[in-house]
Length: 382
Image 1 (cartoon, rainbow, N blue to C red):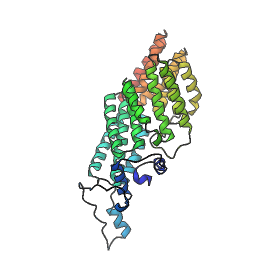
Image 2: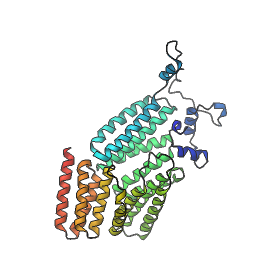
Image 3: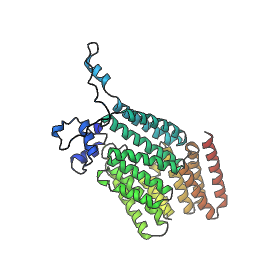
Image 4: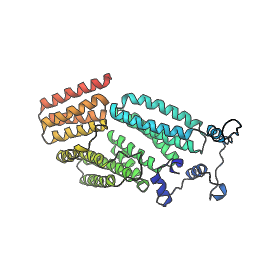
């Protein structure tokens, strides 16, 4: 049933238990049509669907088996949506290994195809609902790809499109996730007030979220508070620490079924984000302790994320005066930048160079800067 309604099993369970109330009439009408509930059993009246003709009944055949004839007459939007989600998983793997730049054009073509199918789909159908979810997921991915490539204006634009799809479907989980992503983009752009508004709205959906989704939202709340705390406000520091603690607790809870939105938000991931916050708060020694404790948990498969983790580790080493270690670790991160072209990782490594230079380690800073130039040129030539 969850698959029919294009929601997770966990979200369906919370609806059944009364923890999440579906009050939007359009959503209720869509669910009623998908589940083929007889109108006399509904407490509301289904709105007429005047835009599209009723689907033609399956043909009867004297040549083909009835099962085969019926299958040919059945719309393929649901199967197509599921195939596109499988392709989306492949895009995420490709992004981890080779970065965002070449993938942006591919995802744009996919979105154009999805939009065409969405425009041709029947209003109120299960296939249309599923395609709209897929359209939102692809728009969210494209927003991330632009963010990692350094184009924050395009990232914000695609995030708004993803939000529109989530709102149209009345999908609390996806809506909250895209709000979190919008907050993250706004944080990178320095728009902290907007970032705070986004994450506060996302957390208002907490009752409808899985533990991993709550964890990734709380981690973003911590990042916003860490960015605000750079002005010295103790309240922001305490809010950051509290959000990190709650994020770690949520990430450690047993998974609530398969989570295709925040399945990556493991305790190791939250720890790496906590280290990022401590660097922002001016405590590189705490960041270094966290990162070194988690080194054995890092996977080379998540190559771009590994590069960011190493870049943060290099900044932490530089912050505590471990100059040679900072340059060595930065060299590994630069190797990954050469493969992925991650603008965010490159910026973190530039922060390491700035720390080295400020500490009077001009030779080490010069060596690292040269490594970054080579990595950037290599990435651009691929």
